[in-house]
Image (cartoon, rainbow, N blue to C red; front, side, top):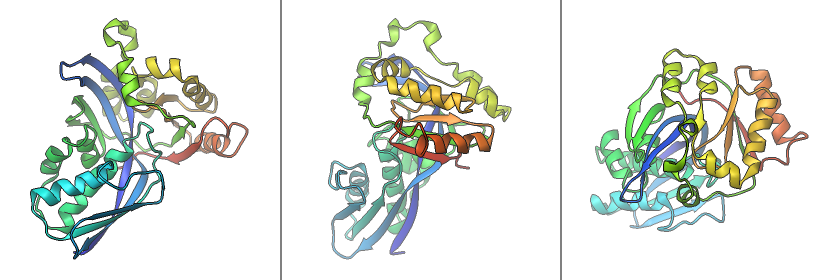
Length: 292
């Protein structure tokens, strides 16, 4: 095998709770991760010349050690003393710095692709153990589907799948620093009501009840982001006004997603935010569904 063409799928958080800050600076979390069909495309080719070459369709993305894809490839080249090189082309579609694990899913896809290209014989679990050294979301991006994520995000338990449903994604024209969000999340000072009911979402997933999944969603990080970036709350409110059962910020933001139980309402919401009277609320808007 000299080349592979792969899809790197994005994720949303159906629920996100932060339990405590650890002594090592990380936070213990309890969240529900969900893969969506919106994806980047990653093409990889084995090359006779050693080294890593990375190109992207977005000029502002780094193509060296500052890119997780590059570091993922280098990790396996170094570990297995691979004499060949690899050329990688990324077509970026998932919004950048958006709370959708875009960089992590690209890196996870590279780990998977390197394993295939060079016949390394690693299992998904073995790839996860390597991936977590690069980023806490990478193990889930290798696993995909619906999962409860605990610890720093690396302890994963598969959950019942989110039933098929339309999902509208909208990223406003702002960037939100994950570091800023967590530094300003004073979790010990928050009331109990600020913590989402993760167990109710798990129960709704087990009952295959999309409506109850949506109704019980919550993200504790909104206590920081919605205060500092009111446009996030504005998009949430507009999605619900346009028919979403509920809308929530994904990860540390700023992407907002709305879950719908009516495809026509989802399409209307997408068109209103993408092309219509509310097109100035978000810079990037997508209509997708759960990856299955």
